[in-house]
Length: 134
Image 1: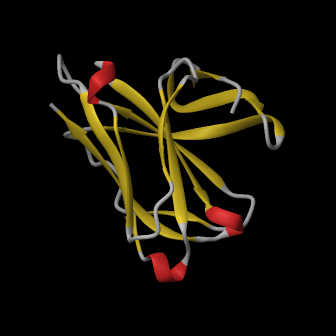
Image 2: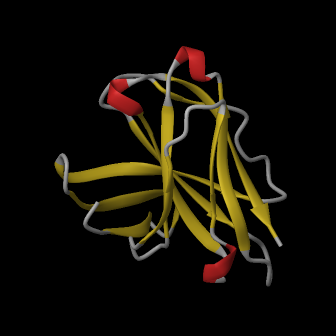
């Protein structure tokens, strides 16, 4: 990804993410939003080989994001993640072969992170995202 902009639609959720992806060109997609302490996500899904989810996580108050992660059943589809700051700078990736992917971002001291979730080689599958604040 060569960068993106994150902005609210009409100053409220759902957020929109726009930019240029090095692999697929220009994109404009809805960003799913969650704040710790809220309802959050139960489960999301990469439904097709071209599906990509962007999840916008915010820690409340003075808390900082320590880690963003997903859990899933690897045997049903290999999912991978990339973590970005809100300006679109890559913070880290996770491309393992187990039932979870996580990126530790505590060194950056951020209270908001965007997590990109996608299927490896077009894989699909359900996943549950999580956020660690501290």
